[in-house]
Length: 101
Image (cartoon, rainbow, N blue to C red; front, top):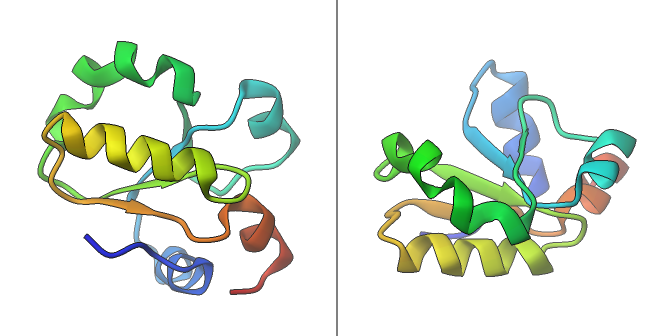
């Protein structure tokens, strides 16, 4: 599945969509600033949360971090676990919070 830009995500959120959004940053990073509706599951704990995410296996999941590196790892991991529609937020929270793309 193709990754998603911050502009596309912002447009979808403004249109009232509520995609499954997972923030793989650490809790303190999530507390400093977050994208509305993002669920915080730090990258290191993602393997322990697979059962919680099982219902989303064939639904779109957008993973995000600060810049896109950790979320890229999360996308790879989830895809390897059988998730079929995982997208990485390009530029991560840094770009999203700056309002750019």
